Amino acid sequence: MKGRIFILILGAAVFQLSCSSSYQTQSIQFSNNRIYASGTVNEALQKKMLPYADSVNKSMNEIVGICYKTLDKKQPESTLGNFIADAMLFGAKEKYQITIEAAFVNYGGVRIAQMADGPITKGKIFELMPFDNLIIVQKIKGDVLQQFLDLIASKGGWPLAGISMGIKNKKAVAVKINGELLDPNLYYSIANSDYVANGGDNAEMLRTIPQLSKGYLLRDAIFDYIKTFQQLGKPIVAVEEKRIVYVE
Amino acid sequence: MLNRRKFLQQSVLTAGSVSLSLPVIARELEDLSEVNRLTILHTNDTHSRIDPFPMDGTRNQGLGGVAARSQLINQIRKEGDQVLLLDAGDIFQGTPYFNLYKGEPEIKAMSEMQYDATTIGNHDFDAGLENLANQLTRHATFPMLVCNYNFSQTPMEYQYEPYKIFKKGKLKVGVLGVGIEMKGLIADNLIEKAVYSDPVRAANETAYFLKKQKDCDLVICLSHLGFQYKEDKISDERLAQESENIDLIIGGHTHTFFDAPLRYNNKQQKEVIVNQVGFGGIVLGRLDFEFSKFSKRQLVNSTSIKIISK
Image 1 (tube, each protein chain N blue to C red):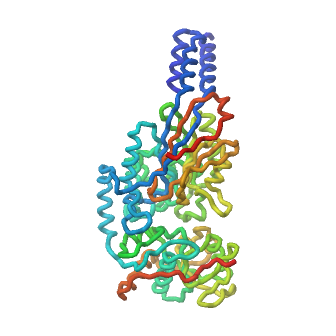
Image 2 (tube, rainbow over the protein chains, first blue to last red; image 1 turned 90 degrees about the vertical axis):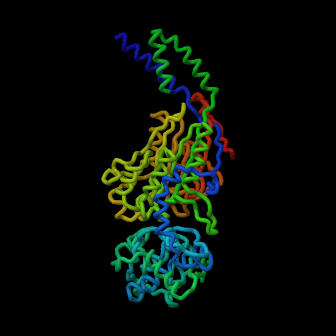
Image 3 (cartoon, each protein chain N blue to C red; image 1 turned 45 degrees about the vertical axis):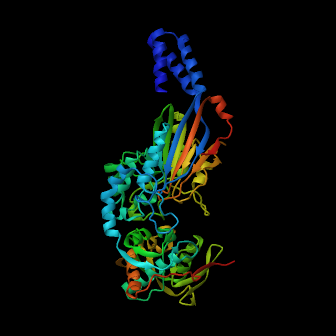
């Protein structure tokens, strides 16, 4: 009995103490520090990474092509975006040997902001398209294509090839395919990554549409596209050509 | 707190009387005048950037790299303050290191740098949940925190926690994590049977537990929700305003470079700080918190937190 009172008193004292005060933030000093590789580095960690770096360099430093002018990623349209969408349309046509009207790359799927002029390494293409995404072809009705293009418009514009359009109030307007206005009743064959064709990046309208797949990686299409420039002895060029514009 | 309890216990036990808690009061008064410091270092969306960005004339050339980051972290640790090193997810994907090694060098480097915790980003699913679980089991010395995903039907079952409490000197810091909605963003086959729930609700419940039941002095939310969106979508900005008991949100996903941390008022009209440092390990975020001890009565009427550029 005596013991129990004792614990009670002790409990009360601890309770009071733990609740009577607390630490509170008074000030925050911030510095978002840029990390410069030219400064000193942790050599022990560098050494630990070396075996990985060696084999990455060995397999990825091969020069696959030459970029004529630095390509940039931006919205609604960009040189880097057009390059990758053109590569996709080119690769899809070659691989499937059917008429394919257009190709699309989700904006978030372009993983570098710039591709520098000069030699392009294999590793750079892996950075541009690190995902093992397959090229999928789907035959879709014009009205569904319109929905898909509205999604692209609402997201500020994605890289695309074979189509031109305007963005107005987050909708796709004045859509032209092969120079003709989009017909909601016609069927079009379009190429997407399996990620988008399976409903990724909110492309829900594509999810249930039958898919053609040849197990062809989008990244491999880019390599094949670059090869055609190499074979012609030409550097890679991509320009903005008003595939997507804002209209008011 | 533990030491003080022991001290109290001893003094009460030896004297057998409550009146001798006087030394305790004296000690409490002493504590009130003292300032505690905690340095929070953070990254987000490092995306397999083991090496610095190459010197190819692009805008990030010569920046980042794990060896340089580690050096900077070590220098800061040498300053002697308590350090908490945190990450807000998307450790994986972006350089050939990930295509070849599926995250092993990334996790190893983070363990080497003594990260205290990370949360899960959508790209950490990219080589499958089994791969993520394996990489963490084999190479991580830090936990992956997320309170709004349920991984119990997946290979990640034993490789995540909703929160973790850190003792840093006299401070008790609760850290929790929140992840972005998976559907529509992550391929179905990669999501497997992982279940997403409302991040605001999960974060508030966890933060309440940490602040009120575990008496944490500071509650930090690691978030991979993204800073802000044009469309109606939950973001760090909205989480901050709809939250309770969270003091700091370390964000990611949108690759946003903040010039300075931002402050928002939460549901209780208390300040929440939000920070995010771009991507690729280009920037190491540093927030030096200064704490003073106050009585709970004073806390309610506290003034705005000073945010100073270092």
